[in-house]
Image 1 (cartoon, rainbow, N blue to C red):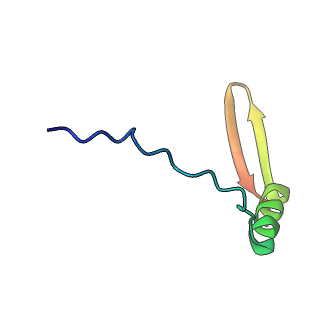
Image 2 (cartoon, rainbow, N blue to C red; image 1 turned 90 degrees about the vertical axis):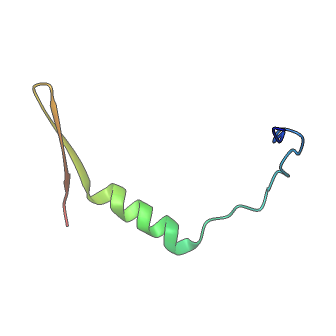
Length: 48
């Protein structure tokens, strides 16, 4: 018999806070990322 997976509702977690290192990494990555549009092509370059 098939098991019903929809019976239990997962508990909502409100305490999902990222580490400071994760935030710094994402901010630095977004600062170094450059997107160049050439006609209909898109090039992504990391400037570091």
